[in-house]
Length: 279
Image 1 (spheres, rainbow, N blue to C red):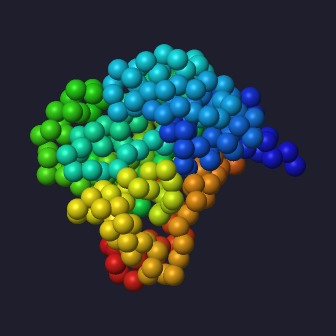
Image 2: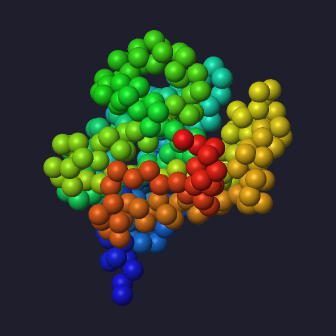
């Protein structure tokens, strides 16, 4: 059995963001191993031997539009993996980087994606409970114009106050709402996301600081570990624990999977639900 043929990436054009580090870098390494022509984008330099590496700030409309012009006319799969931590005072920036910019880029690239291609995102367990704010998330999802989205965010400071969480709730809502929308289903383009649990990456220090009320990294680390690790005598994931399943999800192996929000957290959120900690 030829594994490269099973995955279906060999000699295919694949776009991946956030590929300079972390989960996305692990995914990118696997895509290269599977023979994909990888077009990688990050705000930081990319060290992997990809087909084309592009440095860009994907929280800015003009940068996204520039990147799109540098990508091939035919794309078989896209992976949108970039994100920033939710610091106070950066609520709008977090929305644009972590959700709307990714939606906007998908919107621009969708006509180029092959029939039966795939769109895959990295969301987060931070987006759990998205069902309760689904209608609010749809208000953002239904906006196509960048400036109109900025106006919406500015008009709803209370909603975006918990910036990281709301962005990821919008991501989860996007996946579930778009899987059978005309632009996806007519061409059988699949859309899914993974929701990683506690994972050690180059952004861990930023997330530790943003989790602490005082911005103290050690305090934030302790708070995160108390929530995600200590309750089950567990351990933190490594980037490949998320990057590899992401690649599988976007591959031909999962050719009948769409609209799925998949929690990769060693069963932690399932345990919370079982014990009545989540609705």
